[in-house]
Length: 95
Image (tube, rainbow, N blue to C red; front, side):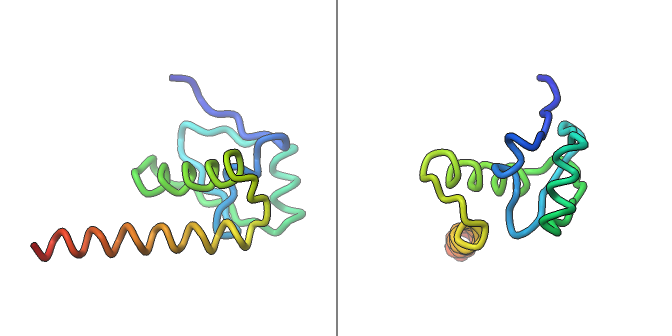
């Protein structure tokens, strides 16, 4: 599988919680870096993990499938989904 190029044209699908999470499989273009700087979005470099994949997937679904372009709205929904998942995991561990 090849690397993912994050550009000014697709950057919004990777922004979550006023941050962009990048792993070693992602490359950030100079134009995308400019947008992040202008919007004051923090770049977080992480190892590839399930939570990062899940956050990116949820944000991408909200943007592409539900046309939720407002960052604050996406962040609220993302937080609710993550809380629900954590609650479900906690309940499963109790049984």
